[in-house]
Figure 1 (cartoon, rainbow, N blue to C red):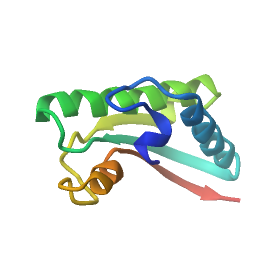
Figure 2: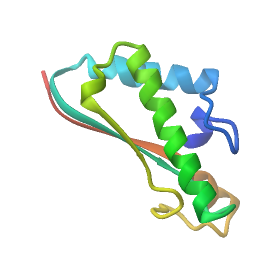
Figure 3: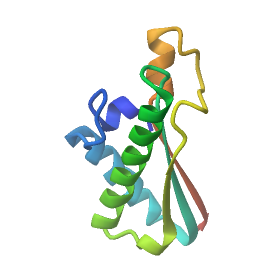
Length: 113
């Protein structure tokens, strides 16, 4: 999920739009008959120090996890981690690339009905 859809720039606090986006993810989980694991990984662009970006990515992933638990997702299924700026999907030299790199990946290991 695009980080700008979830968080304000340089923040780990979920926006209202971000909560709505995550509510859709939680609703989609109801379409699974078995979920084994949900991995939440926060990412940042390369603006700022690597140490700062690592912490921010971890806080963002934890915010997503906390929200999903508040919506009834079993916490035993969830794990959150931060990748910092280390796994870019686009070029950090452009504004558009940096925007793509600010994201949260949610990977669901399960089977659908």
